[in-house]
Image 1: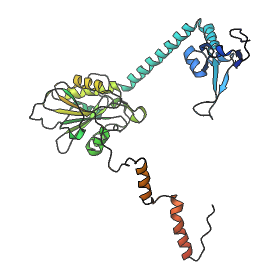
Image 2: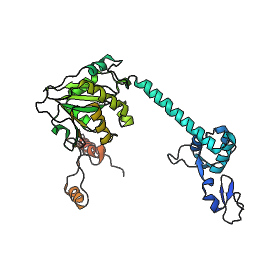
Image 3: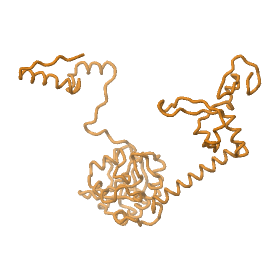
Image 4: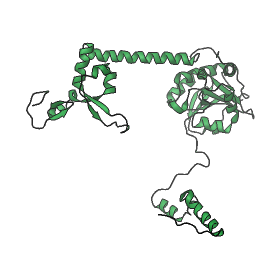
Length: 346
């Protein structure tokens, strides 16, 4: 008979030492939970779980790792009700702990960022503060452009702009896309970034700038992340603070700003930030990705065209590995010295 519902059945399934019928085995109460999930959800410890029977499963992430321990849901809920008074009280305690962890994380971030969210232009590092207190701009354009934020599908170099905004992190890294392409083209912005301290988290929310030697454009690198290699995206608070501080230095008219859309930020949100931080200026947001670099590997042909190209193409010089390339040279040198080349074993 089934130990859950008491019905007699010939097809009984044993799960964690409990014999149950197929109907009970498919119910949610008899589902299996991993050890890490139930600890976080029901606020249980290893000492609490010592009295429960579990099953071991192969770890799906790596079979060589420690096997997973699977527990029955109804047994775990009974244990949680015994410890916390009810299952709802256990879930509420778990929610309270998660919110406390989030508050501590936000507090640590706020302490680490320092004066990132400050309204003034003061920074604890003098080299960073030097960029945030003054900026050199090219001559203002004669034609008065309307003050608005416009989205464009044009390439960033094709846009006639006085100020170009790119994105960098605190680890001397420019964001992939137009930011890195502009840094490769104009090394002066890289030199300006090197004037600021490396691995300095308080740079977030500030910027570095460089006036091009032709005096036609000013490139501004906004520090909107700590490490792009790990996080990938930008910190919205750092982006908003950097744009606000930059807007305090820029004149209200006579200049055109061009900028790409940063990764992990929607064009609508970024356009709203620009309209709020840079009022009175014409801002062109370029959403088109940059072209591939010169010398990049071209796309391979598919189907019969690929087979024809491979059949007519000469063999690559590195086919067969280094040993295959060196074999004729070694054999020729042995023959010249009077020795016979050894037979190659298969």
